[in-house]
Image (cartoon, rainbow, N blue to C red; front, side, top):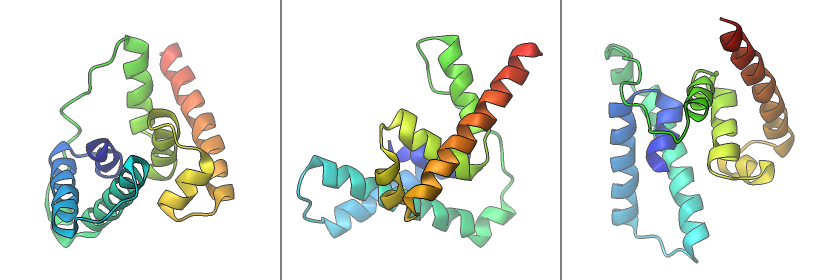
Length: 143
């Protein structure tokens, strides 16, 4: 889950792996006393988002060539893989909320807390992201 969130932000497998390592190092070092598995999951997602944003802002990232994602996750059907690739091609503001909603199962209010955005902004991004995804999938279908 941490890797997929970082991959959503960074679109680079190696950088996403680095973020994943940093997240789990922080967990190991900090050893936060968490109230349960849901609290741990929320903490991991929040730290993954923060570390991904930090990696995006890094001056070293600007110097490194940005390769396209080489590794593709395995899917049970070609349609599922096509949909995932279409989601990954969306702008970050839509891609992240759609991923957290559909692939991780979070509600808009929970996503708002994770991303520190108003719930109305998350709902708007979900609606606009769905519409953009629908347009792109229809265009790809006609090609």
